[in-house]
Image (tube, helix red, strand yellow):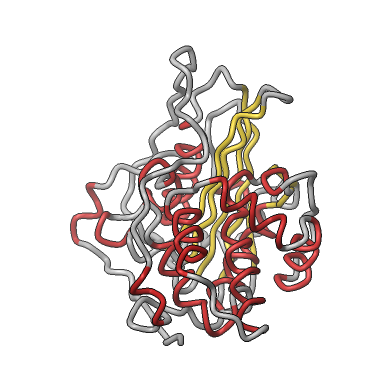
Length: 314
């Protein structure tokens, strides 16, 4: 059901005009005609974001600009080879933030000094819930109903919460997170008391994205479908890492973001997962509710923009 797909990132002549905000190997199943026959019955659901827009009292914070076109400049230190990669990326913010970058060819992961520290995932975990359900269904010889496939589609594209809650229960709650850790080879992460409170680190998030792209997470039957849905993320959830790339390239990058206001901690949790042909990237953030939730996406975009100037991988 899957096919190999390698997207060569176009180096656009106009990238020098792109304003950059401060701040490993197998195959990637691609889009195509590999979807099961039930696809004909899927409907395009209405947008249903996982969190409401930030309150009017929230204060937007700017992220400094770092100019420069994408691509490693001659004489520059490649972030993948740097002795202290985290020092090559900076963001002026009081928020907690963490990032990681994986070279899918080698499996090497670099990142901030705290890339092993965890954050509550919010909707970012929905990519795994879809993968775990679809893989297990295929292994059991079951074909998901059109209704279930529509639920998964809106859960990924629009970050709808009800399907996530349903799948989390069906998949055994913490049992699905135990499988996540085993299947994706995670070292830092653990289950919470619900799907959105699962705790992931940035480097583990890179491993999850790679497991999705390699077919390990969703299995051979459904990988092409899941990656395609993650490429089709839209609306409120379309922010962060992907926005650091030229518009023509963004639709080829699979993402799943998470954003939620945690009243118990009085903080926003805003996280980004991205899957490219040869790389995966994660940026996790948390900060007070008094700051607009979009600040997390700007931090992620900033990190991704800087990384594009510090390695030829992305």
